[in-house]
Image (cartoon, rainbow, N blue to C red; front, side, top):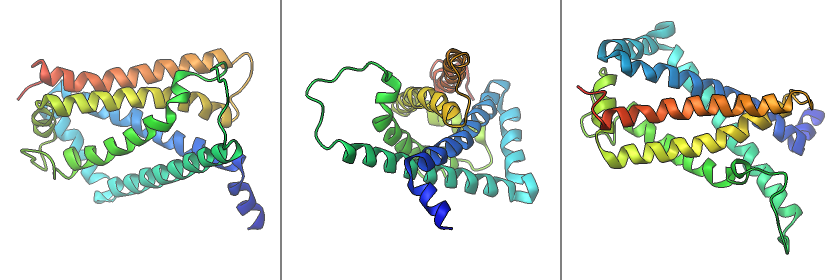
Length: 221
């Protein structure tokens, strides 16, 4: 127990926790996007998908998935916060002259893209899961909720902003996650960046396309 406690209190242990939880969240984000894109197949397809999720394992599957994702989010935030505070305490006085040589814009914006995504998750759950901030929420009609929800340009704009933040967070996160999990070699590193960029681009474009499609009338009631 002492050895495990020492490992998880170390920077390496926290990076492993962040990478493992990030892998879970990565899988969820990709799967969630694929499911949501069924909005282009029409109301029947999207509502059938929602009905399927509600009845997996006699209704327990969705709660198991939610618990797993919530645990991953908590661990991810804990590891990220702990590592950030450790880095700040290691250098309480800033550099007199600083230049970004090794870091990318995505990595330097992780500090603010993370909180934006946390706020977005809370709003997203209240908007399209519980319906507490939705103007015309119908529990069993996912398609209706999506279309009505995104007809508000301010709501759509917030979703688009959140997806851009997700893109920055996800690009650096996927790249560093693979590195932490051992996929790191001078031959593979360029492909690691390509993989992170391609997957991130697909997720961001796919998710942003939905509110844009509603606003432009491509997806409608």
